[in-house]
Image (tube, rainbow, N blue to C red; front, side, top):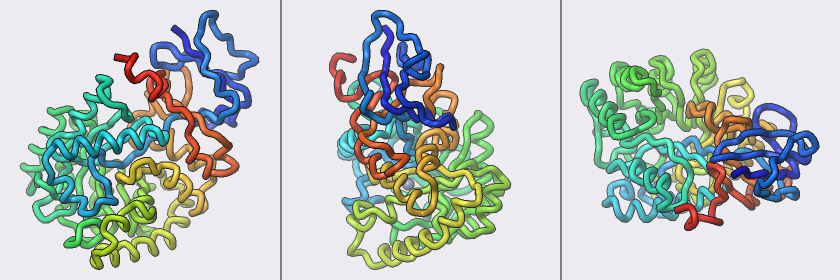
Length: 395
Ligand SMILES: [Zn+2]
């Protein structure tokens, strides 16, 4: 059966200009053709999805999130320490919110208990709705590192074993915590816990099996070691200097921006606003981001976007890029094709073209004129299935 998606305006994220009155043809979850309505032949008997009053674009790719965390509840590390069932229940609600706000793919950047792998299976099996998950399994962090809940890996051998076990269980990438973070009171953003040999081991283990490593790194030596040793994506980078950004450009490392967790009222502030140590770090990070990111984002360094578990807030991420001086077109690309490239899945998703998976969203309004329109997602299609409509029939 063929689906013919009729689009008022189509932004395909290939780099082409938007097309007025376009058609996307879908068969068995994949796009078979994209083009102007006037010249694209719709096969007889095709089912029509009428989005002629909508702006249609690829589904959003949240390049950095956690399925089980709700920052607004506070004590994120404590949430990760809970038993798997309460975490899975939160994840179920979180992923529904993400999906219906337009996120069709999410890169998961550490969970305990291999929770993300089980939840991925539940989504793929049609048990719960949710974005397609790219899983990091357990985060690689040191005993005294940020992000440590239960698992910890110290020394080259433990890191090799941890990474190999993650891959054996089905992980897609490695997440290593190189510096402190905002949401843990005892770490500082520039303190680096791992050595050069340790981060190199994580990168080597990933690359040997055709995968890559992502590093949580705000700045300082942890960020530089990561880039020098071949980490592919730098997460957060809140305190990156001009020299750090220049090195990232030279080594083709991605900057994965995570604005919501620092800036959105539902982020850390809602949950940990009464903890002075956390709030002081956050106010500092906010100032630095507002001062430095307009400059960093204009350097040509490649960037992508992630909500860092502020669920449903990819539109806020995109609006923040625009506030920091990025064009609306580039904000749309950052949330789709560029995030796909950062996550190394651009041959499957991130743009609307023949052969790609049929992940698309329909917006009420024109986000190229007013980025706030991204809040008005009216339809979400993943793998050619309209989400929410036929969740039951699918099974
Ligand atoms: Zn994170």
